[in-house]
Image 1 (cartoon, helix red, strand yellow):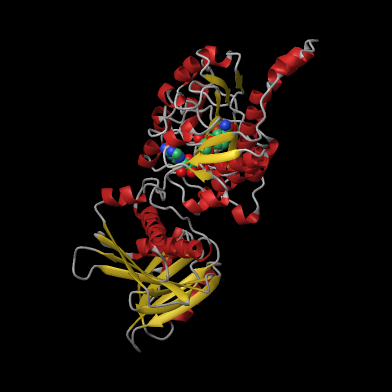
Image 2 (cartoon, helix red, strand yellow; image 1 turned 120 degrees about the vertical axis):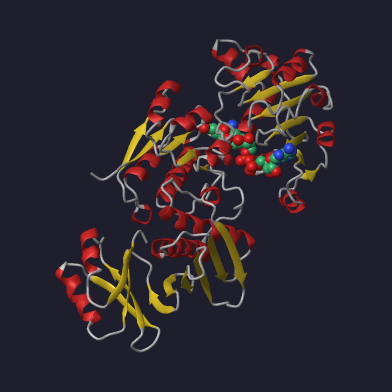
Length: 540
Ligand SMILES: NC(=O)C1=CN([C@@H]2O[C@H](COP(=O)(O)OP(=O)(O)OC[C@H]3O[C@@H](n4cnc5c(N)ncnc54)[C@H](O)[C@@H]3O)[C@@H](O)[C@H]2O)C=CC1
Ligand SMILES: O=C(O)CCC(=O)C(=O)O
């Protein structure tokens, strides 16, 4: 029976994600059947049980993907976070276990920014309290006098996806926008018409409303405490639709009680789903239950993106939003994507034709690529090689660690002598003097991939499907025998390439066949006259 891939979904996902996984478009189709287990409200003990034989986990913020959960997952290869923040995932442990973590940055940006402005308007115009009073029959027009946004200064911490959208919306309300983000260039500040503040202190001293839009990490945890809040003007407001804990909740509550901070709008809490009671019930605090990303539009975009990431990863392709591929900052697209696929395939060919203990794997790249590209090509080379030589699960994530574990040295060389085509050579060296094989390939025009050499033999063959790599004496009748034998066994030859070192010397042929070759067929193939060796290369 064909092995299926189990996808466990532990958060509410838009239907588009389920539909894409069930009805995969041809360009994203996966060969194995998918078993989708949708448990959006499952408690932890159920998830722990289900995770054991799960291959892909798709989660939202309510699932703690911590070390015990990851260790319980014996077959997990991908954790897909249907959101931006991944603080609830133990990424170090995932990396250690070779599990790829992906997320969906930018897909809920607009929703989170709109909610931030919603909280701000609600807070300054007292809309929730006015609604409550009016719907209960009251008519207290003087009780709900608010404050205008126009002319006020908003201080944004973190001018990333959400932060810069909040800046844009705030501008629409005629607010003055000041920002603190040491990791963003002046150009981004200029583009967003945001005034740069070089320190958090400068920002705090100069704003009426503080809004945080940074990830929660060691640096940002409790970055706003009582001391920081008191650097703001008395009567200021604060907003947190990023992550609970960036603003220390106890300190915020204290300054609210003291009347120093006039009010707060909060969507994200330190302890979800059980936030600090005194904080959420404070009369000057407006709260929502972490719904920044909860709009139809954001969930559609997230659902679509996460399903695509999952399908790409199952197809072994480079994903668009990896979280734990630490050295790869720019991921493959266009030529690089094709070239990395070719690198992986070439490496897979090399891994299936050497017959000695490998000591060094060397990748030589002759193409116009930069340093980040080389890292992608390196990972592709390692993945292709190891997926054949290692029994362990190999991914871009753990390939380096697995190679080191096997004691194989990796070398990479970049030559820049060509402009119109990308070439690569993969060499495997053993410890003995004659222990060496090399496989070369080339990518023409960014789309035509060809295997072009094995050792000293030259070819031009598509790296697709199954290949027989055959070495024989250069004597009459060999090709005829091969053709007759394969035809007899109902194997169709898609491409046949013969190369020889000299007339009457040695020859090598690459035979690309349609469909998969049975072991028996290749075993008997080896018995044909004049054959020196025949190796099957599969999985291309
Ligand atoms: N409430 C909700 O449902 C949602 C919450 N979020 C959260 O909002 C936050 C922002 O998300 P994005 O804008 O998408 O992230 P982003 O990564 O695009 O932007 C974060 C920005 O923070 C800056 N930053 C990092 N450390 C900093 C520091 N110590 N001081 C100042 N700036 C710093 C970075 O340079 C970056 O520009 C995240 O915590 C994310 O998880 C995002 C979407 C929905
Ligand atoms: O809706 C979710 O699961 C959380 C969204 C969020 O906070 C994020 O994207 O960082």
